[in-house]
Length: 181
Image (cartoon, rainbow, N blue to C red; front, side, top):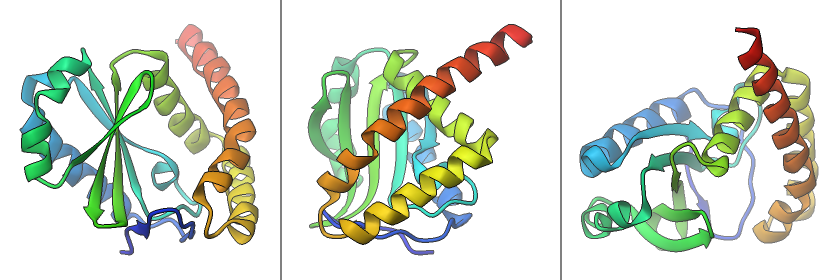
C-alpha cells in the first residue's frame, strides 16, 4: 500500500482496499485517545470512494460535541502522531499525520450532525452509490493532476465547483432516500 504525499504535491493512485484498513486502524486509535469526547468517526474523501483513483492520503472526519473538549486532547494526540494544524475552516479543526512535509492523513474534526459533518458523509455515500458521478470526479482529478501536480492549492480550487454540485446532489439524494424509508 502506498500512503502519503509531500505537502503541496498531487499524485493519484488506483484505489487500494488497504486504505480502508488503515482508516479503520486510525479511527480505532482516535477512539481510544479521545474517549467520550468523540461521538463518531468515518473514513471520507477519495480514498473512501470505491474504484476511483485518489491522492494516497487518508481523510477521516471526527464528530465531536464541541471543540473545547476536543482541543484539550491536543497534547496526547500529538504524542501519538496527530499534529494539530489549526482551524482551517470556521467549523472545522485539522490534524495531520506524517513526518516533516510528508503527510499520510488528514483528520477533519467537526461538530457531530453539523452541515459540514453531513456533507462529508453524504458525498462519500453518494459517490459510492453513483458510479457515473464518481468516475466523472476521477476524470476531473486526473485532468487537474496533470496540470497542477506541484500545486495542490490550485488543484483543490479547480475541484470546488464540481464538489459543490456533488454536495447538492448528495443532499437531495439523502433526503429522497430518507423519505422513502
